[in-house]
Image (tube, rainbow, N blue to C red; front, side, top):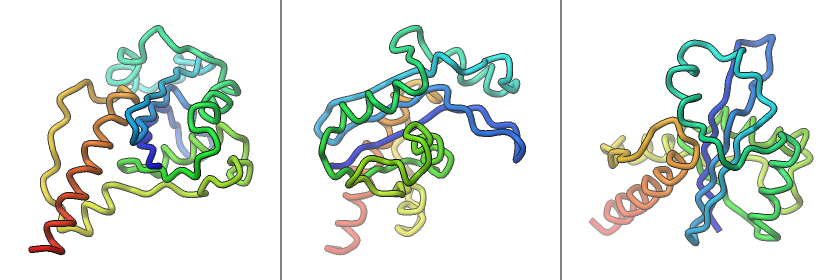
Length: 162
């Protein structure tokens, strides 16, 4: 099954780790997961994150960092998932860190995330559907990633058939 992921995070360069703020996952079957890292120190956020991300975190589903990974395992179960994200490199790093090192990802899970932007580029960079919800909310962005996947799948099918 496909899982469309997005994270919001703080980063401060090569001497500092990427800090997860929130994660959203939209499953292909319509289920959704959202969590806010209650242990993130918001005083370390840069001005862009303070203006564009922190106001959209919400007050629900606040969890300890270590608990988020356990909740995601419960959400996905024994499925052999495929993960998709948009400009997903940093998203994948903070996702994998929820389980420890990348090698600690649950058995049967890939060690990589497929990237919608790369697929879009491969298809000639068609104009993507607009996002009609709040950007920089991880769950809303994950939902949009699913819309983008559907759009690109349709575009790829039409290229083959056309």
